[in-house]
Structures are given as structure tokens and as C-alpha cells.
Length: 235
Image 1 (spheres, rainbow, N blue to C red):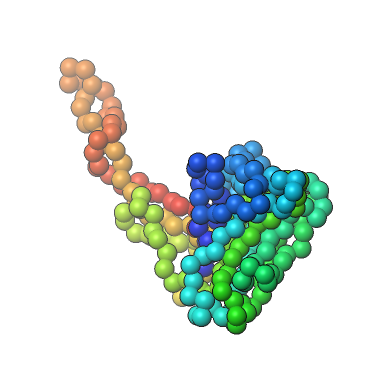
Image 2 (image 1 turned 30 degrees about the horizontal axis):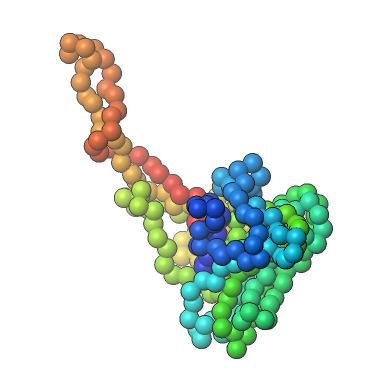
């Protein structure tokens, strides 16, 4: 995801009953939802306790003095079946917040958004996914940006290249289509990049079948012998 500061922003990593990189506030019950998602293989299901709002929060590591007065944007796909149940927020210092509108409750995915200038006295830029007390909602495919990020990690499975970089065309369709970036073009903040490069096949058994006559080559683990195109669509 271009310029995204959040880790596990797609909620694809759920381990030890928690979403990696996110902190639970208000004692919600969280789980990985694999039948209702906007992108990828799962979303975050959050069921708030009856006595308090339930939150998933994350404060990316930033030099707060460098981002003061810059524009911060936080977006997330949210699903709810009751109005005024779920929203997203940005927290500057624990007491001052910027809030999105609440989900309409129309039983569909909606892209919620909050954008604001980072206050001069901010001590953090924290993303919050919030569900009101006793409510249930789902969150997926989020991102937060405060200016450009100039470094991206190429997946370790790609050992040659990358040879092709394509970008998500529409913000409202994270699964595509994807198109090549024009020469010298700057990727669009909040869009996904698809990176294609070269990986390696497993070792090939080039024997000729039983008794050395006939038989097709077969693949076995334990070695490396040839190229294969791999791609990572989760950026």
C-alpha cells in the first residue's frame, strides 16, 4: 500500500487471539473473519463489551516534530448491520480526536475516511477502529499516511527484479484491475502496488522413468533449478 504507515493494515495476521500490530482497548472480543472480507483472506471482527466501546488501535512510529502541520489521512473499509455502530478515528494525544462519520448500517462494506492536519501539540498519530458498546462490526483494508514513504520492502520470494510494478486503478476496488505506472509517475497514496519478479522452481528429476526408458521429468523438493514469476498484491 503506497505510503501506508500501519503494520498488518489488512488484518491478515491473527495470532494468540489478537491481531498483530494492533492493541485492543475496552476489552472487545476479536476474531479473524474468513467469510466476510473486503480484500485478502480475512477481516477483523470486533464485538464490543456491553460496558464500553471496543477498539483496535495502532500508533505508527513517527518523528512527531517532522509531521506536525502535515496532513494525515486514515481510511478503512467497515461493515456493520446497524447504524451508528462503527467508525474510525485519529488520536493526537489521548484527549483530542478526529472522527469519521459512522457506518450507515446498510449491511455492506463502506470506505470510511478521516483527514486532518496534525496539531502542533500532538504527541502521536494513532489510528483507531471503534465499535460502540454491545455493537459488532468488521474492519478490513485500512491505511494511514502522513506524507510519502520512500522505502518499500520487496518480498523475499522475489529474487530477480522486480520487473513489473502495477497500481490499483480504483480506490473502491482493492482487487483490481491494476495498470502499469507511466514513466516517471509517482504512485498514488493509498493505492496498492502489485510487484512481479522472478522466483525459483523446486529441483527437477530428469530421469527417464523405470529402467531408463520413457517417462516425463518430474519436480521434487530440495533444490533450485529454474525461474517462475511470483507476485505480491498486498502492498
